[in-house]
Amino acid sequence: GAVVSQHPSRVICKSGTSVKIECRSLDFQATTMFWYRQFPKQSLMLMATSNEGSKATYEQGVEKDKFLINHASLTLSTLTVTSAHPEDSSFYICSARDRQGSYNEQFFGPGTRLTVL
Amino acid sequence: AQTVTQSQPEMSVQEAETVTLSCTYDTSESDYYLFWYKQPPSRQMILVIRQEAYKQQNATENRFSVNFQKAAKSFSLKISDSQLGDTAMYFCAFMVSGGSNYKLTFGKGTLLTVNP
Image (cartoon, rainbow over all chains, first blue to last red; front, side, top):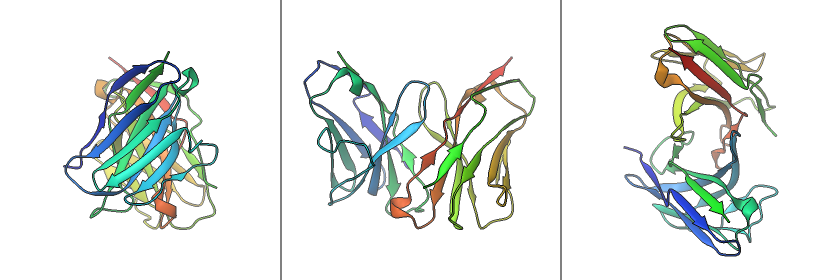
């Protein structure tokens, strides 16, 4: 149980285009989902927290207009990188908290590698 | 704000031996959780072990155990009988209990290589 999927696993896009990444909880309802960014050989940095049906809360320094997060249902959150540039190339990971589970437990997706040319 | 420090960027160990990864943290909170996550080459984050700060007993999960020293704000991970599959990046993480959305703060990680 407690499986989180991400789609796509890899995406390559041209500079200036927008890219959408989906995060789904497959066998549980997620009231809260988290989006992280990970540069090569570095740690995970929390970008934003999304709660179902409400606006996402962004961490300091994260551009909310560039990284649009939508959490429209209890099983799906999306991250849209708008007008992507090469510096947005990174590994993006989502995690989700089970509505009926422990508050301290997050289940992670497998990540999405974004390359902007 | 909470900080998590992992002072060992890389470590290596021989198969079947024991290795200890260090982690220290800084917080003014009294109620929190500490975690060790493993990220193998597949990059899937896997929870290794979790410790509640109010519990004095150190958490144990099979070959993985922690040494939690609350006063020293230290949380090390011991891996016994190391296996090749333990080769991964290990992240120490902190979470305030009852904090806003229960967010995780990660350390920079320790790359562990298990040699045959």
